[in-house]
Length: 208
Image (cartoon, rainbow, N blue to C red; front, side, top):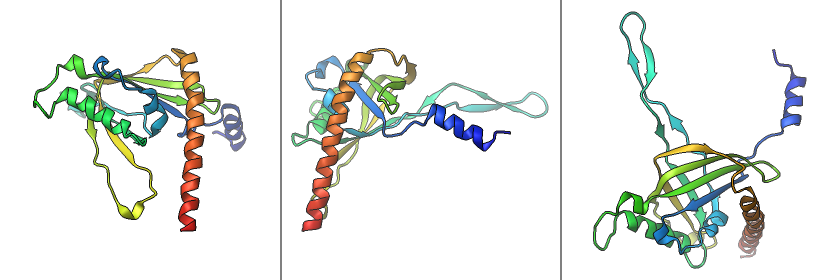
């Protein structure tokens, strides 16, 4: 039986992981490489570590049956990004979707020409990567509708994107560590500026 003291010691020794410590990196197809995807990293304020399901069927030859897995099914990745004044985030994913199905020609692109790679990394309190997954053959399956409302004139506009992909695999957290660290420092600064902006908006609402 685990005692309360041992539980406390374990929490103090190994600390905890916070859901707010993360970074998302998007590497699109080369045909839209002109976009600065680091901006997407800074603007992504909501993400997730997608799950995995093992579909099963029941096998029985005699007596009680047993369930056996038939493969793996990977859940889609949902992202939410704060839009800049140039709306680059929305335009980027619209353009990416056009590579898959062009609305002017109604032609479908070649698979290898429209898939990219996405990384989602969990960080500790020191902003060091502790868990990283790589999503291969990724593309934006859904760019969700964006509500417009005069009654919420000070709300930040966000774009929600659902990423489809072939599979995710755990990636080495030591890969590109210096590069990750540089971007994390910038992301922290960007996040602080974002919080300051939100505080200003809340103050403005109170003054109205």
